[in-house]
Image (cartoon, rainbow, N blue to C red; front, side, top):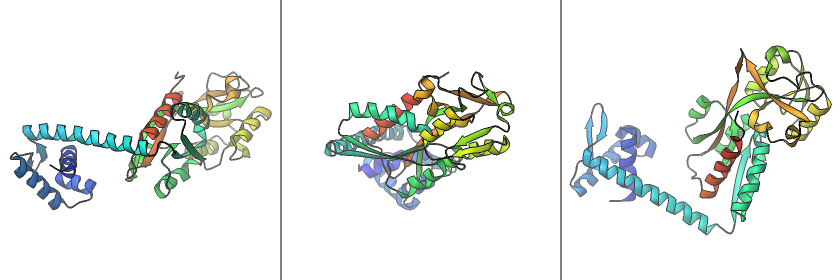
Length: 301
């Protein structure tokens, strides 16, 4: 039995269809069917029962498929470990992230450097609309950003894993009339002045600015300038909860991050990590993503 044949039978079992499995494997359905038939002849068993309802493993086929799946996982892990070993002296990660991940990534960098002191990391900040195109057409390892699930599912060449489901917040300074609020509603921010990372950096926040008739006082691609605008002027910023909670000025109470409600309900946005399907994550990449998820989910309400 060849590794290729193991991959074939595992994929057919997963898809319950030779046609669908062939599409995912990028081979012809006749070629896939012939390969499975050759394996059945070689082993002297029937691996699948084929009918109009689908392709279903036989009892002996289930045993073979389970073992094949285990072997493929071992081979995949072995390849990852060998790759990491060969590149251990110089491991480099290229990452793209939306601004909301800035404080989380800063903490993640501190932890990954302790665990993998030889790793070097290049992090580029981009607005969410640009990130999807970036990961499809460049050599970045993975990206962190907020996005709607249906949009991610429509991208066939991208894997996506949930980091956290975040609440939408507003960031205000001590001079703001909203500072002591437990939560903020549309009525509270109607016609107020706001600052934003970019007018088009997030579709939902752009929509809020228009619906709430907010005057945009400051537009910038600098988090520091946004923070100073909130501190020194009577403006607020729409933000994600996890992106704000580690900021030193929030920890010190100089500015506050307050949940935003619509129709008396908290508003949620999903934060994701995405990466190309044709690019396997190394163990260091997986560990970095784990650390980001751990940090982002701290201090849950």
